[in-house]
Length: 146
Image (cartoon, rainbow, N blue to C red; front, side, top):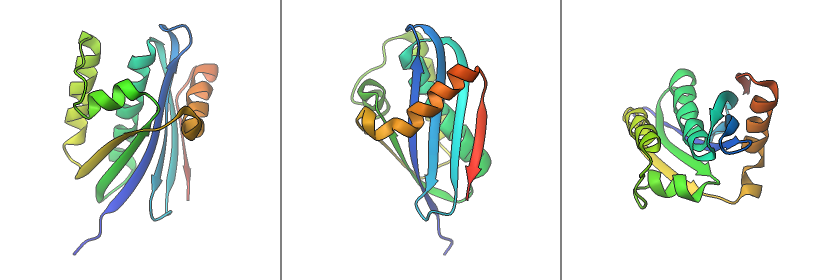
């Protein structure tokens, strides 16, 4: 039987001004410790909630492009609203957030188990620093660590 990879993903998104210049960041770790990916994306003018969703979308795209045999993904976000919407506990009412949620549902399909968990901001400092780097530099980036 082929073994599948479990990933731990810390995501964050933010906007300066809400709306304002925004960015998304994610740290993707294989639980086996074989690979780590750090990503950031400059988003232009967005709200904080749009940026949080963009971070999850960024993570799914990076996972699709950089990892194989993914069986389980555990997402950690510091936005209780977005986590509760992704877990189906809260209904998204804003049309743009509804569209972003539907896009994430499509991105989830190829993968096995997916979990979304809320964490405190201080537990998400590395993803937050990637958001700030993307906004400060006004560009996207990706770095791999083995």
